[in-house]
Image (cartoon, rainbow, N blue to C red):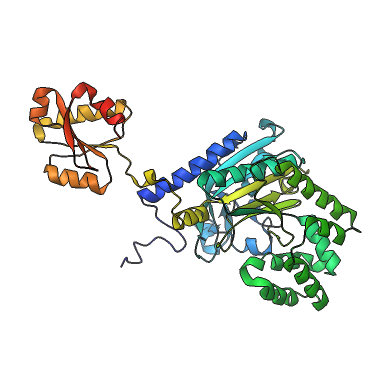
Length: 439
């Protein structure tokens, strides 16, 4: 059993080579899809000024920010001036406000970096994890929401998912339904926090929490009826018919669904009146990905037209989507969705070392094979060939190149296929092409 000194901090992880290959594969698929939609890469610092993050994530989120003590003399005071970023959206808003003059009027970016939350670790939930964000800044058009849903659908389909649903709702629709149910305006924010937990604590748990937060019993009953039923977008429109602002939000959602009907998102996009993402900065459409048999989501997002204005002093339209890399990796691992090639090692060929006299030629041949486009691991010192073969087999290296004194004299290389045990001599000038085209 590992000692406390060798374990990573709770909620943090070490990643061994095969795990890193899986992560790089998924990140590569995500980035490639986002680039197809015209999004550009962005990176921001791990640490932000504490005032940048506080007040942006609502009551629940603010409790989960990892704060950093002041350095030097200030450390003993317990004061903080920095914090680890909680997400990638608030840093994006800061970047847009800081560099607005350098950015295009419509700024489309993707960002794949770690974030930190002082959360309770659980299956698929960690204190340090990657987010894969895609955002469009500068447009109020519902084309943005439709395109984001299509891009996210393309990512999940490319990774092999088929059973996902992108839930769609709108913060004004939620507010309208709360109002229609008789929830007092002052209690609508707390009520949304409770409704956001439907998939975690169930209908009865939400009912109890709503009552604890002061929502009247009659309103609780109406709310649970609304959010427990299969409320269509047409029925939602009827429920809020007397609220013009909310009807406008329904029309926005109808437009998103219509625009997305010609994209890869069409089979997966659903209106869900119970979706109530808790982050306080969402102002319009909200989205979340649900997958069969997974508690929680694979990601979500929405429109946050007011957030950048908190830094800039004027409203800037913005909408984004964030995929949870860690949960995607967990589900793909459990379902055996990764390509078999990721289980192979990082080398195609082990360049063996026969004896001290052949070391210079082994180094030279390894360089020649790399120039031919092969991934080559050079065994570092002379050793028994059987031991070198076992090393290659344990690392799932497909081929071994053997360059002994006899092979050197003949101008040949012995190539061994470690999958089936066959071997044959190949002229040295042809060995690179032979290995590149080997089955």
